[in-house]
Structures are given as structure tokens and as C-alpha cells.
Length: 450
Image 1: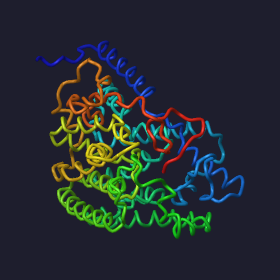
Image 2 (image 1 turned 90 degrees about the vertical axis):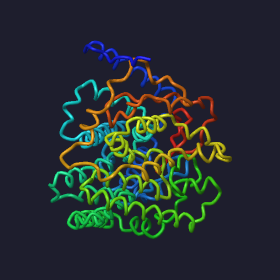
Image 3 (image 1 turned 45 degrees about the horizontal axis):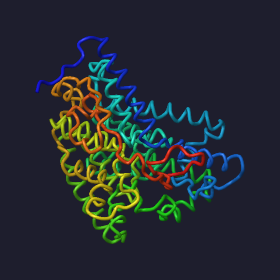
Image 4 (image 1 turned 120 degrees about the vertical axis):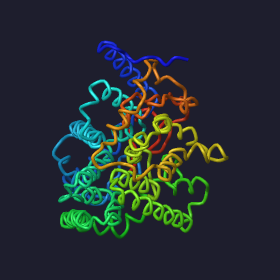
């Protein structure tokens, strides 16, 4: 069968882009859950209660729920500007900040050859990214994941370019806002980047010290109590928790000794593979591996935390595996894990409810490392080896069961072609009562996640 040709004129390309934008809009409006900026409402309510009503940061609860602020105190300090504006302006600012962070992330991953992509490839890439469930959730929740990813990748860019005088500052700031990025400090130590590790540690400690000065009582409560209480964040066995601990919890074995063993094994493999990557000067791979490891070992990794896997898709496509990257990316656009949010028992539940974890684990173990050259951008090489632009056939209307057969050019962030996710099969599923549920229309009473 002859492969369909790409549009040969700007008019044809524009028409294809407009059709894809319409399809993405329909998909986003009908299939995924719109989260009603619930997490942003948590941040907003916490800051306003703290500043204007003398409340305590970790006592605030969203009305009608048990969910409140779960980040380190410095995160609340960083969100203080929200105390000066109304909720709607805070939502608008969140959207703009996330868009800016996404643009920065794409610019870093694309490298110096980003202008060669042109408007058409970037338009296709954005359509593909709009379908990626972790990104959808990050925007719709009003989450901070993209901002943290941008901060961390800024250090990757500095190290990769050899201009590393201030490398580590982004990692330190991200670690002070949310603990998971602290693993990148260990990555710097493995890579013998002593100065960068020192900068990251100093920035994290300084930011944490600022929070102690701003609210000593909240800092004492967080570091001695709240940090160790995972129940404040949510249920370990909830299907949105796509970490190793989440897998164990859904199996009915949430015991800490077994989880600790898996964490140690994961960190051992991570240290070995990361050392191999930095020895070859492949800092992009080292950062990608660290993001994957952080998602696996964290007690709770909600679906929206999985924006950390984006650099891995870029690397996988760059290494010559665009079909595999496209298929895995397509699965993470389908919201397929929510088919088992009621019952994750049985073989199908074990495989299906944890499918994002399996993808993360597969990338962690199989991602090619030590193959890049510092002067090459991950995306520029990929752009040369990928197939022609995708078919004009609309890829967005396929069913979930056909996702593994989607176009090999599906990883939009990596190769600038359209990703072909399908519609979720469980459109008639019962609404979720959990904050990270993916089957409920936007509710009048927002709910929370971390």
C-alpha cells in the first residue's frame, strides 16, 4: 500500500493543521476531564487564608473536601503574588506561566536547530502535545510540573553547553518547591559536577531558610509531620498513582519494606545508567533517566507528574526508535488507566491500571544512553531521519484498542509529527470521586491532588 503524501503547499498544510486543531479541541472537550483548576484553587485558598486571614498554611482545606496544601513551605512563599489578585486573574497567570514553561522546555529539547522546523512542524508538535494526558492535567489542574521541568532542564542546557557557572540553581529552586527534583542533586554528584551540586544545595537550603523565616511554625510542622504523612496527599492505591508504590498498593501489598527494596534496586540501576550517560557527555540522557527514576521511586506519582517522561520520548526517537516512541506516547494520550479505576484486580487490572508505570519503567531500563554528541540537538537529528509528514487522515478518531498501531511519527515533542491518540473507551464510566479522577466533567466543587 502506498503511503499517503504530505501536503505540498502552504495552503494544504494550513488546512491540515486547522483540521487537527479542530479534532484536538473536540477530543479535549469531550473525552478527558477538565479539572477546573482545582490544584490552583488549593494554592490560591492557602495563600489567601495565610496572608489575609491569619490562617496556617497546612490547616487550609478546600471547602467540601479533605484536600489542602502539601508542598514545602517555600512553595507557598513563591505563590504569595496570588494574594494580590483575584482567582480568575490567578488562573490566567497560571495558563500563561505554563505556556511559557512549555515553550522553554521545547526550545531546550529542540536545541539550536529549532528554527529549521518551521511553523508547520511546530504546529503538528503542539497538536500532539495537547493530547498528552500529563500535559492536559498539568494545565487543567493549574499544576506546577512544567515550571519545575523547565527549571531543571535549564541546568541541563547549561551543563550540555559547557557554560555551567550557575548550573544547579534551577534544580535547587525546584527541589525547594517540591521534593522530587532533589534527586537531580544526586545526579550532579554522580556526574562529578561538584560546583553545580553545591549551587543546587545552597539554593535549596537558602529557599528553605527563607520559608523558615517567613513562617517558622509551618516549616516545623511540614518537616516533622506533614512530610511523612502520605495520607495528606491521597490514597496510595488510587489508579492515578503511577509509581512503584502505587502498583504494590493496588496489589494489596503497600508494605514499606518491599517498596523500600524496589526503591533501592531502582536507584542502583539509575546510578549505574546515569554514570554511563555522563561518562559519554550525554547530559540529556542523564536528566531524562533521573526524571524517570523520580517518578518510579516517589510514593505518589499522579498522572500529571509524568511530564518528566517527555525528554525520554525525545531521546528514544533520536536514537532511531520513532515507532516505539510514537506508540508509547500514543498510549499516554488515551487516559486508558481509568478503565480500571473501579476495579484493578485480575491480570487485566494488573497490566492495564499500571500501564503508565510500565511505560516509565520500560523507558528507564531501555532508554539508549551515552550515544549523543554535545554539539547535536536531540531533535535536529531526529528531524533528518523521520518519515515524511503524517497522513491527512485524522488520527485522533481511533479507538483506544488501536493505539499501539498509530503512526510511527506519533511523538510530537520528539519528531514534530502528529500523534494519533484515540478516544477513551470508557466514556460512560461512573464519575470519579477522587481529585485526580479522569472521568468526571468539571465539578462546581473542585477537588484536589498534589
